[in-house]
Amino acid sequence: MRTLTLTFLSSLLGVALLNSCGSNQENKQKAMIEKSAFGTTADGQAADLYTLRNAEGMEARITNFGGVIVSLTAPDRNGNYQDVTLGFDSLASYEKGSPYFGSLIGRYGNRIAKGRFTLDGKQYTLATNNMGNHLHGGIKGFDKVIWNAQPIEGEEPALKLTYTSKDGEEGYPGNLAVEVTYTLQKDNSLKIDYKATTDKPTVVNLTNHSYFNLAGKGDILGHELTLNADRFLPVDQTLIPTGELKPVAGTVFDFTKSTPMGARINDSTDTQIKYGLGYDHAWVFSDTSNTLKQVATVYEPTTGRVMEVSTTEPAIQFYTGNFLDGTLTGKGGVTYAKRTGFCLETEHYPDSPNLPKFPSTTLRPGETYQSTTIYTFSARK
Image (tube, rainbow, N blue to C red; front, side, top):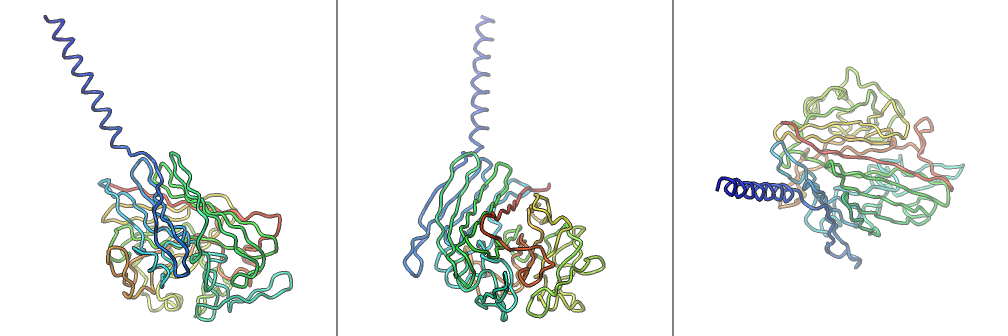
């Protein structure tokens, strides 16, 4: 009788253990990628939305219109996932007047002075769309075109986007074949790989223009930022670099130690803050090689969320949503007021084609432009 009882209890324990293991497995979601319709552009092109999800439950929603990251979730200290990017609910809103929310930027991220540059003795004229300068690829940059999309299934779901920018598009020389791959990794990282080739000498500077808010709401002034950069690029009144690489030590641009974004953002005694209406500048790294390095960390105290940025690029543009003015209604009917989002755009220096001492952005036939940026999300207790 005793033997039978023990056997029976052992069986029950075994079943309980199996059920327990099953529950733990169910807590882990299956990595996947799903496709759905996202509307039709004004000129009749269909846009799609791709939802990438990893086993941890992190989710990235990306459309092939402009390669836009429509939403990206990240865990807080209690394990709750929340969208931490700014954007819109509809394709029409992105078309109508988006300040580059979540977009792929090209051919040239940031500004080119007066929309002109000379390459191999020939001057090229680009569209001027920002204070007399060329900004983020022009009137119809990579953020406003339909990309070809290829979903890639696996434990780390990915979306490969390709687009060929024709010779003369927005004034740029050469047929530029571009490939951008978003990969949602196991460790709650979103990896972005950029690649491009050309059939004529041209200039290339690709980036992503996501606006982040790790609290999911309110302003970003309490977010604490660390930048592994000891110099930044001062700009003129139209936000074009002067050519100087200025040390951050002793200035309001020193984020070498973790500092709230809002601590010095309204310092009216600093000319650069006046020009940018806050922070809208490039910080440059002493390591200008194309090796992957961690360059920035953002911590949001109320949720515990942390975002780390690693890149192969030599600079990062830190922008604090200074031109958001409350006229845009975003996802879920939220109004985007000034400084409700921040950007950390990995890139080469602004206006490099006109400043030879800056790292070159020239791409020639036979060469391959390659760049990688990784945004990694976690939480502190």
